[in-house]
Image (cartoon, rainbow, N blue to C red):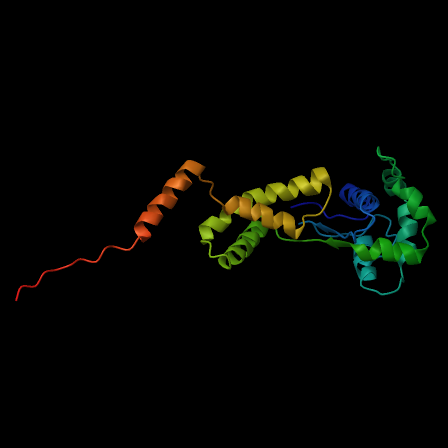
Amino acid sequence: TMSPITLRSECVCEALRNFWTTRRKNPTRNVKLRLITTAGLTIEAGEPFGASKSGLEMWNNEASRASPQHSQLLKDFLLSDNSVASRLAEPFDDGIPSLIEHLRQLPPELFHAEFIRSIQWLPQQPDIDVIKETVRIRLQAYGEDKHLLAHDCERALTPLFEHIAHVAIRQRRTLTRADFRVLFDDSTRMSVPLSQYNQLQAVLATGLQPTPSATSEVNY
């Protein structure tokens, strides 16, 4: 079981940095982030958001509001907490300004619109085996409409997870429906050499030719 996470957790700060760089590199896209973890949420040391409220829980609640209520408090914490601010101040290699620089310039309304409402923290989620089983069932349902057997659909399961990891971690972009369709099609297709295909076509053509009707003689 993973330790509970807070707004100070390294994975949370890294998620914020990844979200910021992805938005900068995709200015025409509506970028969303969901951090999915089996860990729970806990209250930050020092209780900066109160004795019974964690920062991540406050963030999720704030994201459901149309207008900001606690956005300034959350932004102030990111800017003032030493451990968080030092991580968010780390520079990027590709000329993107640090996240801390950007946050300093944001009024609470824009922070709420650009960050709070675009990021969701999802704790205590099922582990990878449960997720794979869910995806396996979805793949079978998707393939059923294409008249594929369940076993054939499952051939796309491992390549799909590998592709998601490559896209999310190395390329830091989202998986599109077009990506999924191409990957599923590649995983469930069987390639046949052209020579064998031509032979198969010839056999089928021969088998489909009408059989000459038999004639019989009748003597009177």
